[in-house]
Structures are given as structure tokens and as C-alpha cells.
Length: 151
Image 1 (cartoon, rainbow, N blue to C red):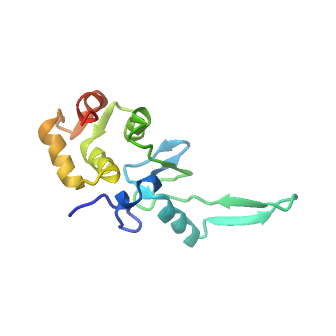
Image 2: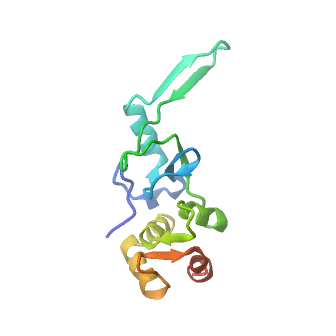
């Protein structure tokens, strides 16, 4: 059974959906991949991405060397969690990370499989068969809000 997987641990993203998010650069998502926040934090830690020094007030000043994405090698400087599906506007904005008003059906299926007990590939096929998906494999945000989310 195909599940939505974290590219770092290859574990099921749906096992802890509240810990799932995406990598960012200057506040914007940089790629389609979704990760467990803990896996990404551990990867940074193992790569020497964290350092801490005592500031003048005795508190540690933590520095993070973000580096690049493990899958696309694009520069990054942050991580944003995927909003819960109950926050429809936030969830749709998270999925429309390219800002085109269109969502890749495969990406949408993975995000749905994170939040619901679904097989990502089966969800993708269901969306392709039952909703307006264009030749690029994209569904409009309008179609998502009007036809998919009510399910």
C-alpha cells in the first residue's frame, strides 16, 4: 500500500500529520516535498546545522545553518507546518505554493493522504476520474474548493 512518505525517513507522513510541513526560503515554499519536522531537525543536527554560544546575558544564542533541501538542493531558511484541513484557506494556500491558482493532483493526493487514512495513489486516481483535471495534471483552486473539499 502506497502511503505519503517523508523523503528523509521514508516513514508514513500520516502517522503524525501535525508534524508535517514543507521547506521554505524567504517565507515561501520551495518544493513539493513534505517532511516530518523531527526528521528535518535531526538531519540538520547530524549535518552540524545547529550551534549555540552564550550571549552576554548567559542565555544560549542558537544559530542554524539551513543549507539546502535534501531532495532538490535548493537553498532554504525555514520550515512551515501544513495547516489542518479545517483551516481551508490556509490549507489551500499551503498547497498552492506556486501561487498559480492550480494544484498538482499528485501533490494534492499526498496532502490528503497525510490527513486522512488514504492511499495517495488511489486518491490521485479518484481525483483524476471524478474532477476537472487539466492536461498538466492540475486542478484549479476553485474546483478544489467547490467540488473536492465538500467530500
